[in-house]
Image 1: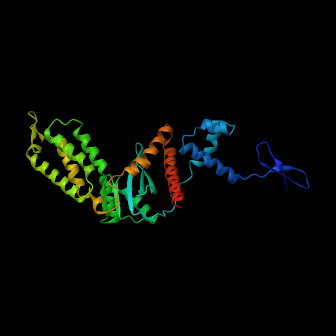
Image 2: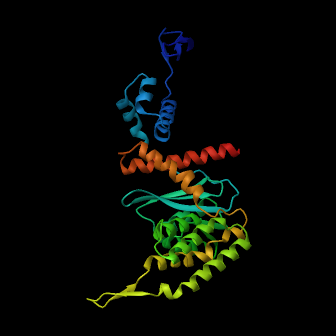
Image 3: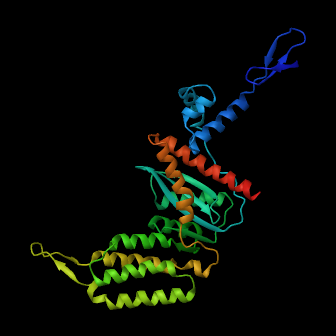
Length: 315
């Protein structure tokens, strides 16, 4: 076979010296690879099927048929190679009874992920086992403090340092207290919760703890007030939301300022929420109407693409 010019599409044509028949060399593996590149460009970027089809002089339905081969491919994370020892974990809900648990390091690089029905201790155990298989040994974990998650952290890693996401505590406190609390205790507690963001040093922590302790003592009697039903004689605490916020802060307090004692520890999961979950949610909105299986493929391919991108950048 000898080279015999180019086809109208610019491909190299070859001609047999003996039978005088010309043809092009077909590479099914390269065709599949190029199609997968287009698949990810459509899935993970703002490229539309219409634009892809127009550029390749074909139809959108033709591309959808070509893309069918990639929905069933299992997407595994690449081997973790960073030296960071901070692990941020959270789950992203795709639809009812479907979510993906995600673990990233302190630099925002995905470590691994796990698809499940809901966030509970059993599924978090599986994720942490996958983290260990990746060769990742965290020294501190940052999370939103979900009960099943905390249980799984202690089960999987023992007495590892844990940083509760400060943003979750502040936002939940302010949501429960509303924008305009109707009591002085509520106004003061909302301000105290908002001051958490100002805590940076040990002195800041001590002053904040003292302020919260003083508020608790000042309004202790007020928080114990009860209301009684005249019909059933049943009672309940009158200021239940205030008590709920107090319980939230007291429950988070032992792990709320870990970032002060351990250097370079994020005090929020914003790197995961904003850097990973938000782009995924934007892509899901862009591809709204997808089947649940296709949503999972989108999430998995996004995470692996983020792994490749960060690995190549560091390399």
